[in-house]
Image (tube, rainbow, N blue to C red; front, side, top):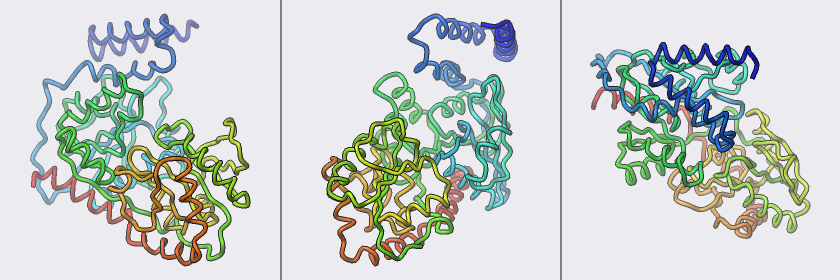
Length: 413
């Protein structure tokens, strides 16, 4: 370790000691020593040695202030605590949609980025985001170790790690949990799955993406919840191809277990053997390093307009989700591409659109359903009607409901 690195570590340690006291400093020091001397802590467990770790063991603030009563005619101020957005992050796009909805309704939002590192830079985050996210006026800053968010009418945790940071905060605000997926399923059964699950018992009010999560959190954890419905941006995703489509697509996310990458590849291999004349497009990630036993177009991560072009070339799209439903099915429908989806409550409770092609979650059944879709005699007209079916499923309407939910809970109605 270089002298420069040692000096930086010492400076960080002094900052922890000054801001949080001797106990916090000793905890951080112990974690540092463990992480650098024990091979078990290299790689997969490093993520836990962070702000989230300290927040978990600290527990709720004993000096927590109660939110001040706000005149019901007055605009609200909301804080959002989130991991930094990355390119292609659909979850962050959704968050920014609802920040935008609050701002359009006359309310103020502040964005706090979670778990700042030594080189954390807001300008760099904004540069990565580019124009791929809904435009918002909200301020943005890192929530550094030992810092507190400004008081507000409400604060939104947006992931399990941020939920612990909201829990320990002593600032005055109503605590919300914006839940887009069931995060315990993101991990093997173990420490992280349990820590994620425990956040649903912290007493926050949950606003969920779709009805499945609202039902699950209420039934399994007694959490108070309400939900917003999924929308489709018809300004971006639109029906533009009225001819025969000889392509299909797969939402390929090999590092995201809940997207069933291997199941999808098996289904597509079967499909390709039956229909070798159909081009197969992989979207969502660079899959060039994976062994794939059929020809395909590796389209990686695309911008929204580029996605619309691909959707309009495809007759069917294979979209697997083993937790909460993906945002993509309604987008595909809007472009006239029929989504083939694994049949389960986590998907059906989110959307009952009749043009979604639900299938048993086996490779053979998924390939059968894709073959069934492309073999429809009236597929062009069917695709056109599928696009029409989602024209009223707008994010604008979901945003209005979201604002109503937040205002209702803060005003105590």
